[in-house]
Each structure stands twice: as C-alpha cells, then as structure tokens.
Image (cartoon, rainbow, N blue to C red; front, top):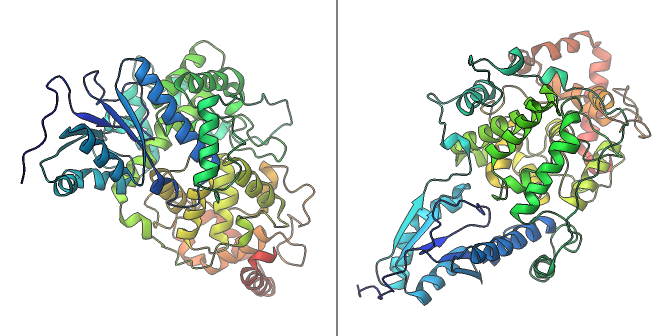
Length: 510
C-alpha cells in the first residue's frame, strides 16, 4: 500500500457534519479542522420526500456553512452523488488522511460511518483514519438509564430527575405530580389562535428551493411554498414565539383537533431540533422558565417538557434498542395496501380528508392527528405497517427513521407487539367527535356503527374489537374497552362484521 499524501502540519483532521447535525457546538469542531458538508443527491432522492423537508435541509446546511465561515472555520459544502462520494472526493483533493464525524442518529448511516475507514482505505489506496464521536443531540446519552426501561413513564421520571427540570429542591416533582396529562384533554374552544411566525426566504434559501425543484421534481408539495426557519437565530425566534404565544394554552388543548386551526397551540419545533437548529435541553428549559415567571401554567409546561425530554428521548432510545429488527415488525399480521386517498385526500371521511390534504400541502399535522386519526385508521383498516411508515417518512418535514419507526410501527400501529407502547391506540368516531369539529358537516354519521351512513371508524373499530376480543381482553390497559363488545347482540355483531368486510375490500371508496 502506498504511503498517504502529506498534508500541512498545521491542519487537523477533516470534520464531516451531516445535514441533521447542524449544532452550534458540534463536538468535532475546531478552528484547525476543515469542515466538509455533503449534499447527497442519493439521499435527496432516496424516496419521494416532502419538498419543504428537502428545502429545509439544504437551506439550513448552506446557512450553517456560512455561519461557520463567519466564525473562522474552513468549510467546504459539496454536492455529490452520495455521502460516501462527497467525503472521498474531499479527502482525495485535500490529501487529508484523518476524518472526524459524529455518530448518525439513523442506523444505516451510522453503520456506514463505522465501515468508512476500510472503504476509503481500499478506495484511495492509502490508510485513512475515521474517528466516530458519540452523538450529542440526545439527552439520554448524557443520562442513560441504569436498567433498560420498558415503559415511557419511568424513563421520563428518570430524565426529570437527571435534568432537574420541574423538580423541587427536595427531589419531588413540581406541583406534587409527575404527569398532568389528565388536565390536557379539552376540545378546542374556538378562541383566537396566534399565527405561526413566518420567515421570508433569503437568496440562499431561494436557491435551495430552486434546486429541490430541479433535482427532485416528484417531491410532495411545492418547493416554492416555503417560510420555515433555516438558521439558529430563526429557530430561536420560533421557540421564543411558542413560549410567549402558544405555550400558555398548549396543555389544556394538547389533544384537541380542529379543521380551521391546524396548528392550535403546538410548537412545530420538532423539525428544527431534529436537525440541530435547536437543542432539547434548551427548549425544555425555556418552557420551565416561563412557568417560573408565571407566564405559563404547570400543565402546559409539564406537557411540553414531557414531549421533549420524555417521548422524544424515549423514542430515540427504543429505536436503538430494537433496530434493525424494528423495520420488519408486524405483530398483528396486517397486509392491506395503503389506500390511494393517502396520496390525494380524496375520501368522504372529513377528518381524514382534511388531515391528509394538510399533510400533503405542508408536511405537518400535530401528534394527536397522527396518532388518533392517521395511525388509528391504519390500524383499524389492517394496513401493512411498512407501507404506513413509508408514507409517514415521505410526507412529514420532521420525519427521520429514528422518529418514525418507533412512533408509527411501535406506538401508532402496535406492530412491535407492545415493546414501545403498552396498548394499541384505537378509537371510534365518538372520540374524534369529542376532541374535534371534524364530525360536524361530515357525510358520515358518527353515532352509527352499521348502515350506509355509519362512520367507517365506528364499523372498523367494533370489527377490530370483535375480531381480537380475546387478545385485547388480556391487555390490562385495553381490557375495559372490550367490555362493550359483550353487550352487542348476535345479529348486530354479524352486521358489523359483514359491513366491515365490505369496507375493507373497498377502502378507496370511503
């Protein structure tokens, strides 16, 4: 093997930063280390992504590169056929033989990082050293549980204790309770909702919008319809806006759904923290400061803190505990194809129509609509979990594999057999009517289980309970919901099953 090319003694190893690792304090950064960011055409085209997600990533990477240059770093932003090709070309051109990178949040990219030294050495013909640093984007790496948690609640309490957030000096939870979820189940009251802040695209972002249109013409949505934050300063402004404008009402309406107010009081910050424009502890601390200042109630602040240091961290933790087998789970053996209306919104179910159309247009809908409408329907309709997950991965701006696999396959579809969530999240139209205004004006009858006008959520819900009655009774968290099955007369049972079979055979006609 020939010797490695010589490189300037004053230069340190090259630092490869991924597009979802745009941290101000990236652990590999040092002024003597040149930085390489790769815009991978292979990754952009890996699937049919939402255009707003692609614009966000490209624009954020380009602004990040400029920000690093302003701080004195040497930065190369390279478009290449793949991540590997971009890194290889950078090392070949610079003569650097040492590469540093932070471990990826997603499984396949991290596996590639650990093979990278051997691949580059074989390809370039001289020894290449690759140092993979621990990922610092998640708090669970700083505060690992002593024993692998099987439930989110003890994991969340562990994270509260370790971070000290909403904890008293005596080590007790603020207000005497760990969880105020019971206070957060009000339907939307129709009051005025502050608008989300909008960030006008600058020249760099407009170029990213054009590039997405050119390189990914089949992307979902319109790349020219873009007003999301793309810098750390803009992300901070979005966080500040949430804390002052929507956090005070976030808690009580956290589970509400509204066709007229798609955002309600949600933060819409996941897409920013997932690429490093915000950091989780900073977000959660900002919320607790609002509680300390008396500008946001405890139920709202605790609900947001639970999302950030509880659910988000738990989902990431479970992802790495269950991979790579998590990709293939199908505990309920569901095999039906995803209906075409998931790509068009062309359905008479008003809740699904509005939610799907909004998702296709904006790349966002809040977590209750994802869980209790989209995943709920997918579970009741016996859709193949992998097809459902592929749709979520394609359509949402905040979607990454570590986010979606545990959330969709684990929590939403219970396809992992209860390893992520202890029960299936199933509901009839009664829940949808209680927590939303979707049923008003819908052509289906939210009170009927059978008949031409019966809401498909009702027919399919009761069919699912009838079909899996024994299995569901064995689950202590779901058993009470099955009690209603015993009160259904035999003739109505037969009618529900017959109508459900017709619906399941004609999902695109709903």
